[in-house]
Each structure stands twice: as C-alpha cells, then as structure tokens.
Image (cartoon, rainbow, N blue to C red; front, side, top):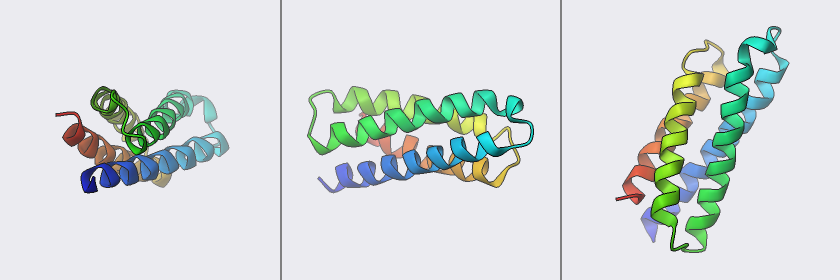
Length: 107
C-alpha cells in the first residue's frame, strides 16, 4: 500500500502543479501562445485527480488508469518544457515525477 500512497501523493502534487500552471498561463501577456499548454494542463490535472481517487479506492482499473495518467503526464511535461516560465518548468517536473510513479503502478 506504500507504493499506492506514493503514487497518490505524486498525482495530487502533479494536479496542483498543473492547476497552478493553467492559472498562471491565463495571466500571461500573450495567452494565445499558451493555449496548448493551458489545454493539456487541464487534461493532466483531471487525470491525476481521477487516478488518485482510483488508487485510494483500490479500483480494479488502477493499472490502466495509471498507464493513461503516465501518458498524459509525459505529454504535459513535453508541452510545458517548451515554455520558459517558471510555472511551466515546475509543472513539467511534477509531471515527470508523476509519470514515473504511475509507470511503476502500471506494471
């Protein structure tokens, strides 16, 4: 169960980082350039929240959910890494950590 909790924590941290990034991107001067980042931040935050919930209730689909979460986290990290803003860099780091934890759960 310890691994479950570590993954839940990583998912919740990633969700929070994505939400912060999403909100900060909306405040950027050239918000149009951040559209894809905003879009994928939302997707990633949602799957991270769902995955944390699925793990906490010991869902029979936990492995599949973790696999999808890892895939979306990787995509979000790649998008955020394209931007120099600190919030994007922090989000990318949280996404990479979450993806790694979710991959461990998906085996």
